[in-house]
Image (cartoon, rainbow, N blue to C red; front, side):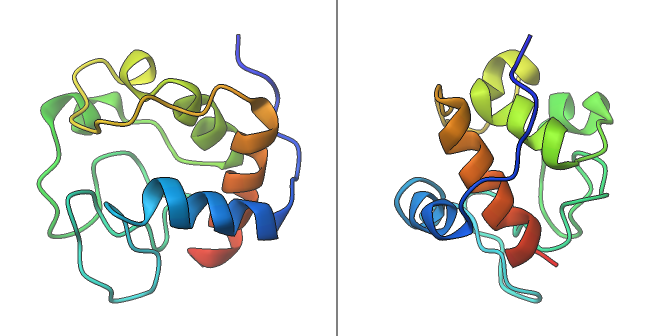
Length: 110
């Protein structure tokens, strides 16, 4: 069972995003998809529904609604959370790193 989400450091989360996520994802409204989908508006959206992005069937069928907690759970081990996802990211093992990243994403993707 993953750790409960706790608000972390937005600044540290921004640095994590820059070093671990930015090569595949954008967060700004209207920014293009990269290898991964643009994450703008992810909180409250169901998995596999960013318009114009070609998701794996596994991601579409998961039907999870993204929240701070579900993102933190997913980011621990994406391939375990959504078997068949095409996201080639091993995850963030430390709860503090996940909390920081999700805290950043919650604000940056509004």
